[in-house]
Amino acid sequence: MIRSTFAGFTTAQLGMAASQRALDVTGQNIANINTVGYTRQRLDIASLNTRGGELYNQDNAIKVGFGVEMTGVSQLRDPFLDAQYRSQMSKLGTTDAQVAGFEQLTAIFDETVVDGVRAALISITTAIDQYSQQVGNQEFDTMVRSNMQILLNLFHDNATRLQDVRDNAGQGLKTTDVPDLNKLLENIANLNRNIKNSHVLGNPALELMDERNNLLDELSSYLPITTQYSEQEIGPGQSVEVLDVVFTDTNGAKHYLVSDGDYGSFDADVFPDSATLTLFDSKGNIGFNVTDILGDGTLKGTLDFLNKKGDFDGTTFKGVGYYEEALNSLVNVFANVFNDLNQQPRIQRDADGNPVLDANKNVIPVLDAGGNLIFDPAPLFETTDGRVDANGDPVFTASNIKIAEDWINGTYRLTASTVLTPEGTIGSTASDNLLRMIDAMSADQTFSANGVRFFKGSFYNCFANIESTLGVDKKSAETTLKNRIAVLNETSNSRDAISGVQLDEEGMNLMHYNQSYTAAARLMTTLDEALDTLINRTGVVGR
Image (cartoon, rainbow, N blue to C red; front, side):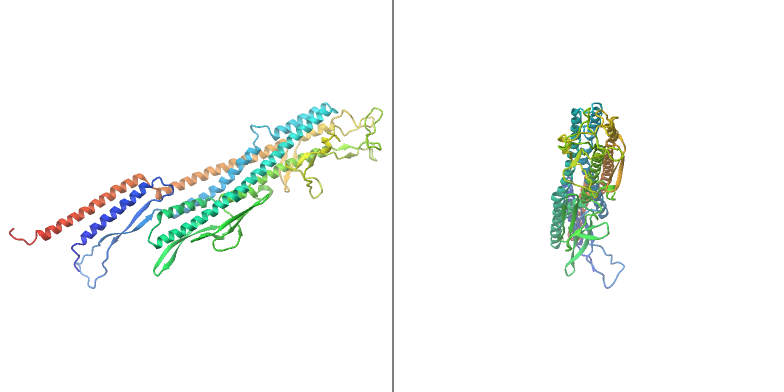
């Protein structure tokens, strides 16, 4: 079979068309160099040869192709780098949510530049010391009570602010994070349908795929995801690619967030002390609690901050609950120590309940059979909610502690002394019990929560320990965040090197395709000249 005389024109024409389309694609890349999420495009071409095999093969039957065929326009993406980038986004989301929580707690416990609990504790010590030098002076008892009230007000304020932090984080999860996440899943599913329909009509829908990839990147910050691509048959010999988005929990179970055009949803329930997250996946599974099986992501970071208490519940992360428990422990030990120290010696009273005085106008104590003083409770602090432990003893927290009513109305005051004078009465100027209170302020106490001891030392140092623990946690999280940002940026740069538009490279492509277009045009001119010679200048002898 003789090759067509005009086959070369077809080759040249196809080469010019391919070069022209490649220039169009390059122009599209350059035009979108600043478009966020745009993926560099490439013209896909293949050598064209429409001839099949011949019955008889001949040595001189040299087969030559018929030029170039444009097979489509595709994106330059590396699936491995996409997966790596989204994995880093999930890890970054976890730490970012934790750092955000710690920053809110810092405003409560950081007393480096403001007078707070530690300064109030010092003021109480000073006030008791002054009272010990002026025993019986009601003014100094009132001064101690006023300083105690200042401390309690700070405890109440800290408790309120801690609850605000918890409420804000919980409501942010329920009303912002989860609805935004659900909207992302819906949008991805809608794009899946639009992309598939475009593919059915022969449109590559590259811009829609860019939009979907952007949403997938954003989705990966909430929880760890993987993407699965499969071929779906739409007719005899025809198929299109469909996308499933899968979340794999820490137990290895897979949950389909998006399956082709179907999508799942999340629901968050925020309780006073914890939060839960339920997934309804796209495969129709009914409600699956994923609170404790999230590997990474903003959801995990927020849930950990709301739910976990570190050593107090056997977890590795100290969330807001840890600092609530630690502060409550400090308050509870402080209140019980001073309530125990402020027991009042029982005194003799008349039928009307008035104290019986001796000849020197001193109160007369009531003694037991062994001649020892009998003490009655005179608590300095009470609870506002009547909360008690298994033994019936009051449980004090930063939110429920208050000054005892009997101390406020003057039924009793601080117990200055618990010893008898030589005359057998309660010393009116002795201050041994006040000195014990001063010692208690600096003495080592044991602080624990949920049966776990977390500190041994003074009240002042306990609060300082809570501060330093938060500082260490925050600094550690910030360091981890910086490291993960650096890794994410490195992965992003690697991805951009492949998928991003590089102006220098596109400029070289412009020159390259322009030259190939010129060469193809020159081929057509050459073929035209050859045919002119063959047709018009061959076979005319003697002209």
